[in-house]
Length: 178
Image (cartoon, rainbow, N blue to C red; front, top):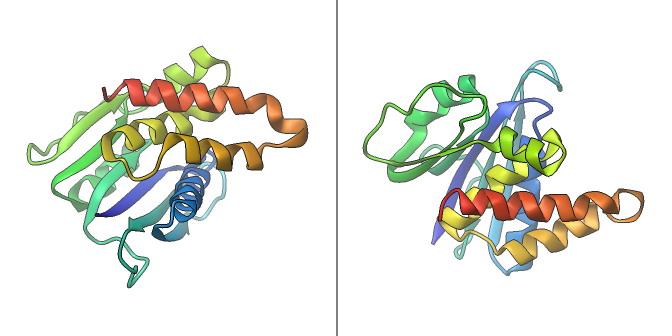
C-alpha cells in the first residue's frame, strides 16, 4: 500500500519534524519513502507543509498531488489542502485550533484536540506527535514502536526527559481514532 500524506500548519508547530520522523521510521521498516518540505516566507508563524510518501513500491516522485491523507494543524491548512485528499482518503483536523468542520462527505474525517491533549500531557510543543499518533492509528503507515525508536535517538542526552511525553502524545492521539 502507498500512503501519500500532506502535513501542514504554521511554522513552529513541528510539521516538518512530524514528517521526517514518519519517513525515518517507515524507512527503518523497509519501506520506500520520500519527504519533501515546503516553507512559507517565515520559519516561525508562516505556513509550512511537507509531503511524505510511504510505500512498498519504489517512489517515483516526491510531490503529493492526490493525498491519501492530510494532517492539518491550522485553519489555513484545512482551507488549502482539504480538496487534495482523494475520495475515501483521510483528513485529520486539529480541532484545538480549527473551529471549522470539513466540507467533504466522501472522506474519513477525524477531529483531534491535539493542543489540548499536548497541554494536558505537560507541553504544547508535542501537539504534532498527538496528530502523528492519530494518523498512525488511522493508517498503519508505520509502527508506533519504530516511531519511538526515532524519537529516542532525536531526543537522547540532555533532552531525554521529553521521550516519555512524546510516547504519551502518540498513544493519546491514537486513542482519538480508536
